[in-house]
Image 1 (cartoon, one colour):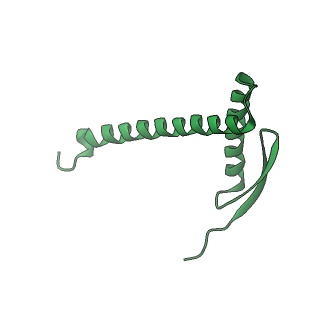
Image 2 (cartoon, one colour; image 1 turned 45 degrees about the vertical axis):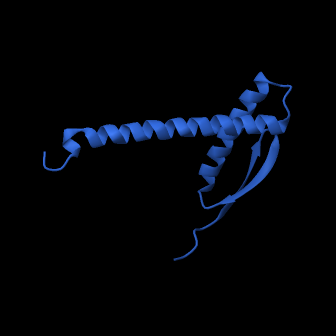
Length: 91
């Protein structure tokens, strides 16, 4: 099996350039960088006294919370789908 094609993009997050390398398409990596930058900007505006490191940690925490909530919602939907009579074979 061959290695996935790697891409490299340079993005700006919270005023700093970052070169990111990954298998995801460059447009997707840019979209993720916009999400991170947006969250950091929101936190930085509300708490301008925080260091960049603390802003980054809070942004990571908020994004992790969003991910956990989406996973919970997804799991709930899968459970609902599996519990419907149409989803059960032989009924």
